Every structure is written in structure tokens, then in C-alpha cells.
Length: 250
Image 1 (cartoon, one colour):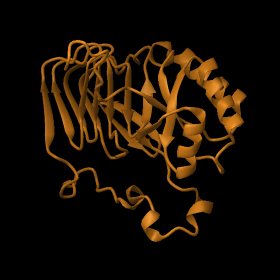
Image 2 (cartoon, helix red, strand yellow):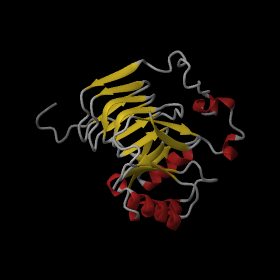
Image 3 (cartoon, one colour):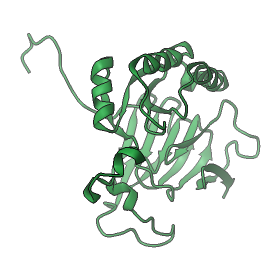
Image 4 (cartoon, one colour):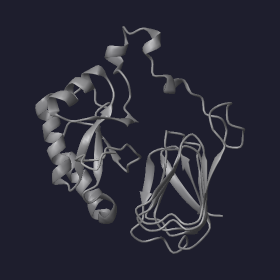
């Protein structure tokens, strides 16, 4: 890089939350997000978020989307883009001057638009059949395990793409560990752990010393401003039952 260059441009993993809008109601959206921010201000105040519009019956007009974005800002969060989705979503993002965030793949074409679409247009991920927890992964679905020796410092992120993650050390406050598979932490978890990052609801999190800010599996999360007494400092496992994230002592 030339020392006279004005900047250095790099790509990397970033911590962004996803706001999945279920109805076009800016006031209700603001109220709900304000409640989340009040419950965990350290996690959500000024948090970067992506707006996912794929679960609405129809794509809102520009004015309605602008109102939704303003509701997110009013609640104390910072919208940074739209979830990657249909060609109409892409056109909307261009008109709004917002990027499409491919990390968050919104549900593809709405049912009405998909009715006349060829079979090839069906989102491949919808065809995936998850294996039972104790079975071996399908060939090529996971690439072994990523081992991280030592602590994960505040502000640091470790991501195990297409694999499990083992951390032999502590995860500090403000640090993140992310895996597309399971996460095993042989130390204290004081930061955030997110398993099943690409949507695997069978993923689990195992922690030797539980003091987490947040744990999440396949997008379902729990935030802790104060750890329940029966879990504080204990060895635990986290898993999903339906859409509910459960935590129990080992």
C-alpha cells in the first residue's frame, strides 16, 4: 500500500443484528425496540441493525420504509442496510441509498411472486434437512473444528465458518465467538457466543463458566444484564426447542 493513499479498505466479519419486521407499524416497531434497548442497553443502544422486510405480505413503499428506519433510529439503534432478498428489495435499497447486507439472507420471493417462478428459483436452503444432533454431519457440510487457544479479548471476534469452535480460554466482556456449528468454551464466557450462525437450529453452546452478555443459536438469543443465580459461574449447555432458547446446568 502506498503511504500517500487516503485510506485502507478491508472486508471482515462485523457484529450486526437483524430486525425482522412483521407488520408496517412504525410506532409499534419503535415501542418494541425501545423495550429491547431498555432491557439491555449495553447490547442494543446504538447497535448496528439490518432491516429484514421479507416477512411482510408485500414490500412497503418508500415512505413506509423511511418511517420504519426512523423508528429504529428513534429507539436508539442504527439501521445500516436491508437484508439481501428479492430484486424489488434491491431496487428499494438503491432508491433509499442503503446497502444490501448479504450476511442476512431474507426469505426469497414472496409466495405471490413465486407462484409463476420456475422451480430453480426456490431458495436452496429451504430444501436442507437437518440431521439429528447426535448423527454425523452430512459430507462436506462441516470442515472439522476450529481451535482457539487462549483468551478472546474485548473487542475481538473469532468466527468458525462451516465448522464447530473450541475455545480453551476465557471470552472477555465485549468479545464475540461465532460458529456455524457448535461452540465449546473451556473457560469463562463473559462476552457473546453465537452458534448455528447460518441457521442451524441443532447447534449447541457448551460453557465451563457461564457469565455471558449474550448467547444465541440460529438467531434466537438471550441477553443477560444479570445472570440468574442458578447459572452464574456454572457449567451449562444452551440449545433450541422450537423458537425458545434454553439454558441448563451440565
